[in-house]
Length: 407
Ligand code: AMP
Ligand code: MG
Image (tube, rainbow, N blue to C red; front, side, top):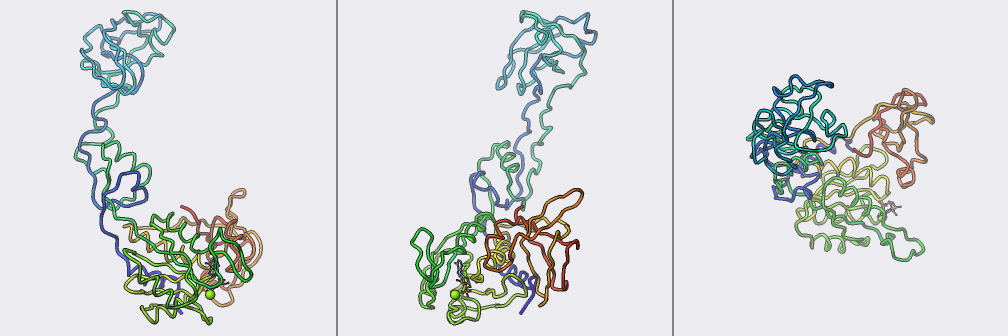
């Protein structure tokens, strides 16, 4: 029997970031850059207008007032996406749209609201300006966002929507990232049926391979559902031997001490096992080792034990293969609303709770019965209240730590 931290460390030691691949930037969402990304040009590439208005020379309008506007000759009308054909010479202005490159000669932009056009005067050869403007106002300088040659994203950066956006800004359609791990998922058990088929006496539907596949997707891996193996060691070993190019095999059930614990038997026959028991609740039986060279994480059969074991051990393994340097969930310090907890056998326990702010404090409420097979209380939960091995009991009102289930 080992602790959760020890088990996690032993598992993580067996995984490395996977080799680089090139991906279209949107497909790379959640993947991690393998090398620094530099800007090939200034962003914005050219100094441009931050407003719809008139590009002018500040010196020309220094004396403008509400009662004595300065009139400038309008020499061009410049939409975004085009460069001016002529400069702004003294006494002239160019009508300009947001994003259009600043014409030479101009050093400021006066927004429509401060011009005759913005005050309802008809547009003509001239525009009236009613206020002075300092040079540089309403202008975005070339390179003010990104400087050509600068490292914009460092190797090791996970790609979120903002990173997708900045890669696009730099004109880069492809990112070089650690490839996604391929995670094969196999349920075991003679009682387990595929959803969508008729229920039969003594049978249950396969929740685990679906829950785990969903968690693999959320973690950034590529799930490969292999279906359901019978409680038959030969069937299991044969299915695993057919696997190709799999980075991790996750099985469900068959790792406890019952009569038909096939995963355990298969590991003993065709693989190697690292451990079988983790001091945690829900869950405790957990196999980690390899089968035919493929790393294998054997989850317990009870659906909540299976899901929480995957959250604690499978998700970090995927994160590591993706090249992520951290994967901790956010934690909230809260007070237990009601009920009491007796950690009688000193396991690290994860209670399904719903945590929310009530007045000036965070309050955690148990979401229902905490049996390791009761998925409905996991459905109602937004976090797991962690009760450490060394904490014998928790009562209503006590401070507790809740690990959120989503980022
Ligand atoms: P076992 O680890 O094989 O002793 O299974 C423990 C419990 O989990 C039993 O009640 C099984 O029926 C249940 N179980 C096993 N596999 C699944 C599965 N894929 N989906 C839902 N429940 C399962
Ligand atoms: Mg079983």
